[in-house]
Amino acid sequence: MSIKFASVHTTRDGDTLDALVGQYRLSSSLAIVEIESNAAIREHLQSGSSLPAGLVIHIPPNAIDLVRERLYRLHEIRPVLLSHFDTMREIAESDLRSALVDAATPIDSAGAFGVLGELAEFVAESVTSIAANTSSLIDIGVGMSATHVATDADRAVAGTAQDPRCGLYWSVTPPILNQWETMWDPELWLAKWSDADSGDAWGRASQYKNTIRSIVVQQVDTRIRESQSLERQLRAE
Image (tube, rainbow, N blue to C red; front, side):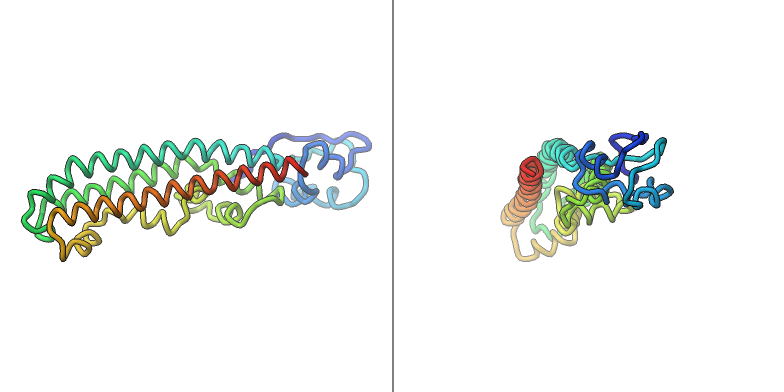
């Protein structure tokens, strides 16, 4: 995806690259020079002298605006994730629990297996949907890379735009996201329940589900705190 530029600047007599950096509150001149949309005029930008009048330059968003946008998106994602887990809990308690309680032994329960299969599909579809709604975070990652204030996580997301889930990588690391998507895999649960009765199986299911939920929420909160800290550092500079 391309960066959503804050503005386009048409130069006037006496304009310099350093002056534009200060005017648009960018962290360095490379933020303007290195973006692809300025490739055709890069020779002018790298000359070190005053810029010719009438030159059209794309200006990327400044660092503080990008960090604020990331914070906004993270705060927007958090309740969506919580709602997802609440819905999953309701489905599990209404369908899975009854299937397990009715089963003589969980590993032989066709009903429990069927419910687990539906839950696995629900989780996969929900994660894909959430990722689609956070795709704008990829643009923020690209933009932050251009302003040279990006963290390693920012650069990683900016470089994975072909992954449909990478918008979520801002808030949930890929390994946890993979675990989240597969947490209701019937084979995984049947293996966990091979030595348990129905009551123990339900307890293990609830514990594992709550653990994943807790890790996901902790990661989102960590990203929010990191972004707030980065914003404070940028404002202090």
